Image (cartoon, rainbow, N blue to C red):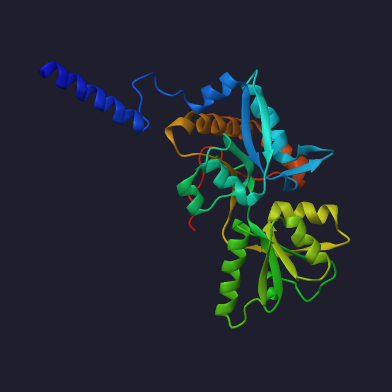
Length: 284
């Protein structure tokens, strides 16, 4: 009878463990090993953020594409698969394990730093404004007071613009309103059409825009807000730790070797000074 009770107890414990997702079998392989075994590295990307990620002739190209071409050399036999998704679904998709990693421009914020395994910086992300060419009524960021301005919904750029607008309100005159867009191309179209007076985005993106369309747009300088960086992102779990470490190692080596600087000159017109050993803790 005692043996029967003991066997029943063991069987019940195994059943409970199984219902909770535990297994007495071998531990689940880490994500990097899984990627190598399947021969495919699946990443989430928003290919509407030039010059970082955008579509040309049906292919995703840009700064991050060139970086990943170097990274994939360290994963022989593995194919890179990039899922082109709206920005609003990128980080939720990562959390839901819809893909392995995020290879798109993630502005580093305190909230993201605490929730995701953000990579070493890949680029400068300090905030700036762009206006229509010839609009002399806006000469500095503070001149957007009393005007309608825009940025991308759910973005760190929108948060920065909202914070700047609150700061202007403290001086007695805030912005007229902030319009949000699914992607920045829509915001730039509204700016060109005169429906808004300025767009907030990161400095590198706006420099690229003005370089390509100098007849339509002008920078509003200086930049505003604290120093910001772009990074990539993985999940903060034990299964993803190996992949996160691998990606940081690759980015660090590309930074130290000068490859990142060369790619920055190619896509932005000049190099950026980025830390190669750790991601600075954001203060916001």
